[in-house]
Length: 86
Figure 1 (cartoon, rainbow, N blue to C red):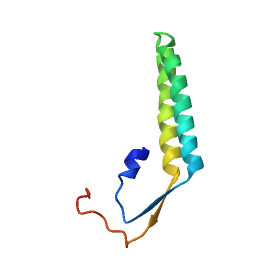
Figure 2: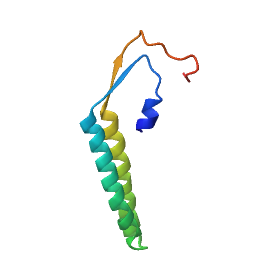
Figure 3: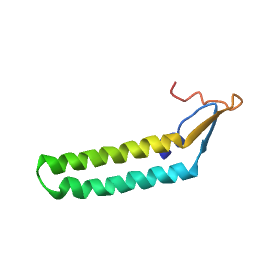
Figure 4: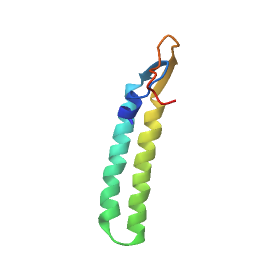
């Protein structure tokens, strides 16, 4: 997410809330780390669904907390590269 946002070309500046960035990494990593042993614990659908649910929670928490950490400050004086994809 953060590497992709660094490549985002816009007429403005992205300001990051460091606390929310850290929270997104912690929650994404924590739920992801719990998802693997739960999903691989047994071969029943219950364990697999639990692992999938936790992995979904990891992805969503990382994404939504991380994206809420970004504030875009418009600045029309910053040129956008002609090589950017519209």
